[in-house]
Image (cartoon, rainbow, N blue to C red; front, top):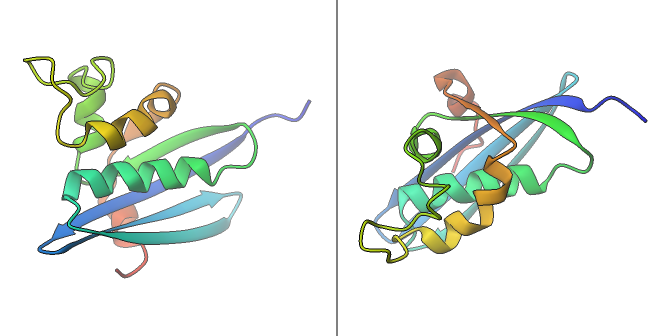
Length: 126
């Protein structure tokens, strides 16, 4: 069986009045793949989560992944236990990005998170 490859995924989401957008750059063995998308009325945090979801979904084989996001929302979600709590608020209600967060919850458990402003600067223009 082949050794898993090391992949870095640099993500960034932005929320502007009326539209949100995200971008991701996957880097592996000197190769890069860029992806981006948008959604009407989406928040910055939702776009940060979608950037991670799309980046992780693009992987076609088992990999060791480092996921970077300059917003810190994904990192906070792990450090503060939001992912383990399924992004529920103190009253037990699903938070405003809970539906999107559920998509990435399982994937975040196998990802080493960090921040890197240089990586976010390389995300495709949105």
